[in-house]
Length: 547
Image 1 (cartoon, rainbow, N blue to C red):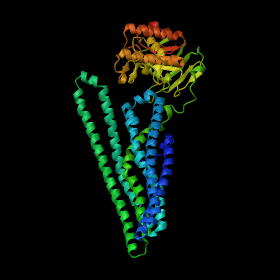
Image 2 (cartoon, one colour):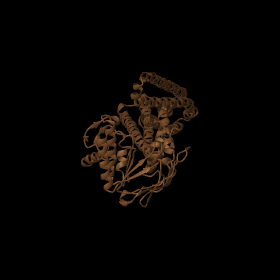
Image 3 (cartoon, rainbow, N blue to C red):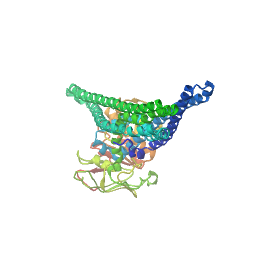
Image 4 (cartoon, one colour):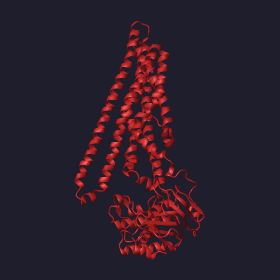
């Protein structure tokens, strides 16, 4: 684990801004510390010599101004650290979400989505302490300590040499303690991820567990995970307190060596009082940043452990397909009469036998139903169309070749899971837009067979408040809304009527027929006879590879 990972600067420009501002403020703070020590030593020396108070007034006034300036600089550094942490977290979250969108649901399904959610949410919040407490001290250690040591060498060579000799022992202790801190912090972070994943899995499957009478057994498992996390957290605190004690002891003994040397030379008259006081005031300041770096290392360890996991996501090849090619075609440049073509398309999956090749044409203005037995590859085919999985063969829309890993501005889609969020129905339908168009929302609901739903109805998490069939229709309405709002050429619905009654399914079919009549390419994955009977074309993955 590196104290400052270069990838943080690469992926978050706000980190570079903070380092620049922090370096300037750190330099200014160091100069103020030198000025404070010199003015205070001069004031005390003049007072000991019995000078008139009026003669001390300018020095005391300058000392007061320096104290105020130091307080302001400390405040500015804290403000810069807080804002830098917020900006860096925002940029990293945005980059991770972009990368997750590039990789698609297949990649996310192969991992624990709850762990990824914990990482992007609570995990990145650990960077607050890293920026607010650790990184400022690291900057001061690199700026203030060398300058203060040089000033001490200039004013009193023996004291400067003493500091140079004893100073390396503090980083040595830091390294030894840091190795233990890193190990326990990583274990604590892993325990937190297990706790988050276990709790979310339990909540998601609680209904099934209750049906089979197994809900009480999970409390013991969750209690064990929680106890493991509690124990590891206490271990982290023990190591943190121990590291703070050792570093404080080492720094105190180091300053004591300087103080003893200065005291002996003041007694024998070989050192002036002003110089001795000046050096004594600078000695603790020289050790303070290095000591604080070690003391705050536990604050950095958590944040850097999380950052390592974030960088593991960001460093991987975008999309998982290798280098992406070209940019996505603009829907405005695609002719309204352009057909969607699959030419010998088969999906490539790691360590799996490639699926059967498919060649098919999906013309505009027609409703096409894709059917096939479970496991025939219907949803996988749609995933290839979305660009979420690599494939062999060619997919083209008119004259534009569709490549894996590029955006699909011409495509609107609704999957088997509605994926609704807390908010109004209108907010869910206009998801991703700055504002909802009320008239278009109602039209989309009507075409999805959900004209009886009030767009202003407020839903809970995961669409709580709607039945399964209603949630399916709202998801279909969201895809229809996007189709009409952005003029998408292709609309794809994956099993949109599996939970619908015949009447609602009939309304949905009528709406899809209207969209096809407007010139859109409408593709529905379904095994329902009503939809197959209403289709202009049926592609059967189990019987034919060429349609």
